[in-house]
Length: 359
Image (cartoon, rainbow, N blue to C red):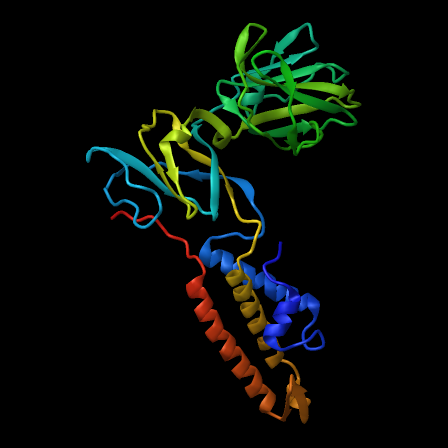
């Protein structure tokens, strides 16, 4: 969603497509949107989910730790500690989850299987400089590969030695009762190149026991046989997407300005950082933001004309006004100055991001 239309920008600038092309005006609008996003921290193009990571730092609580934030004060002892963060993307609509990530997670267990025999390939895939190994016994239909971690995980990177050709795979996870289809964002295209693999972490992702070893497994099953069976050098689990613990949303206060307070929670050894998954942005553009975007884009459009070959003109018109040589520069300059006055007023009306400070 764009913040302002070309038509409005032309109107504010007093120009037409003869003066500035549609393509250039679109560029000026994108520039204006970027300025507004950067200064306010808000995104008005759409609402979407995002992951954001925060290092944990224990800070002492203060009765007025957030001023004019809309988050009510809460009861606590003065020796209590809380965690405070400022999320980058605004406006924050709601939090989906807060996970504690883990340090130094690796493959807990990996099996290559034809459905009857299980070969342990954990050591080979965990070691970067070990001998490459096939993840499927022969790469034929129904061959299986189980990738397991001691904790729930949702992203890993595959390093190939020999890429597979022609084959396809499906993925599944154990939901506590049965194996359930899992949709991947697969940068390897089914072990046919090195790349990153990720998926949505389902709430019912459960421990499974495969060949008497319990783990959180993702199972890959060959659907179409490979002409060349893929050979993997190593698989590295992304620790930022390993769930060591979950922070209850009951213990989290937040507002649309991205201010977050985590109460009654103490990290344990082994965590790395907090991963906030939240929804931000807006599907509507406030009128003041639309006007501001148009004013900034109009200034850019007028400024672009100053560098044109206007010194070749002896006379002309701009809107209802006529001018002689030199007057057009003053007209452009005056128009830009008027727009700058509008811009200064509009900035005062647009929401600014509030950064948490210790008070």
